[in-house]
Length: 153
Length: 153
DNA sequence: AATCTATTGCAAACGATTTGCATTTAAAAA
DNA sequence: TTTTTAAATGCAAATCGTTTGCAATAGATT
Ligand SMILES: [Mn+2]
Ligand SMILES: [Mn+2]
Ligand SMILES: [Zn+2]
Ligand SMILES: [Zn+2]
Image (cartoon, rainbow over all chains, first blue to last red):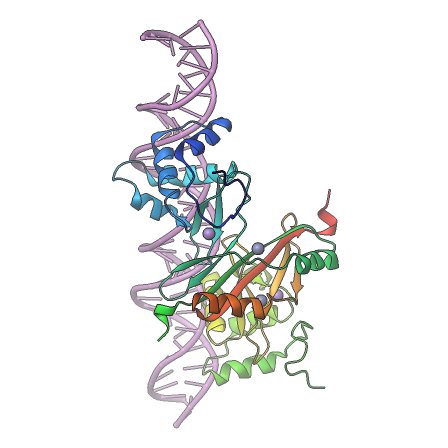
């Protein structure tokens, strides 16, 4: 029943206990707001904005600023990955232990539906680009945009 | 001596006259600020931020707000392409007539050096993704990041 | 030259994100 | 368990990029 590192896109929910122990290992305190945030993240398969997380939280559970701070912290310790859909709002997705969370999305430009994409930019092409210009540690940021079935005319 | 549509990455400078006539064709006025902005864009091979354009402008030539408005207008009429390097600041690059300007960049995460990239995400893979999820009019946003030769240790 | 309307400058508004600071509180120590 | 201590929180205010309202200005057209 072990799922370590296999299909990174199965979105198997990580247990809250595993998440908090990851935090503890990083010498971070497990607080009410943080547990609540992790609880929300672990039930969402797609990236969430700070405001969306805030909206999911039971009213008064915590301040929006606390969410901003928590997400930045979770990103630093590698528990969430920050995504940029180009609309000026940061989005965050929980990632598995050991995984760097690198992946992509297909976003409907009309209704904002999100599809998780497994395909990545071909490594050999990326390597060729890196070499061609003498760059090292090259990575990429890639998102797809289009019209989902429901939004086509 | 015609360069229509050939190498889209040769960055051959478009004449200011050609640019202004494009504007006139779109029923836009050729003003001092606009001519100055186009003059700057046409001498820069990489995307520029509003502020960078502003800084290049002879002091007092025009207001920063005017640049914001001009860039939005130029984008609307298809004369510039907006790029997003993920740092929350919009960048603009002049594009050739008839070209949609779609291309990518390799950006040094340390010194911000920019390299223009010709390679694009393989069309067949994009088509497969589009089809797999029933999306239409699929496009992508892709940028590469790494360490340039001068910034590696 | 007179007219018409787009464009501009300046100030103010905005939305996302960050920061300062006093107060609370989780976790370590006693 | 109580005490101690540093981290985390709430609230207000600041920052940053970008947009908007409005009166004044100036291209383009007659
Ligand atoms: Mn995802
Ligand atoms: Mn470019
Ligand atoms: Zn990838
Ligand atoms: Zn491409």
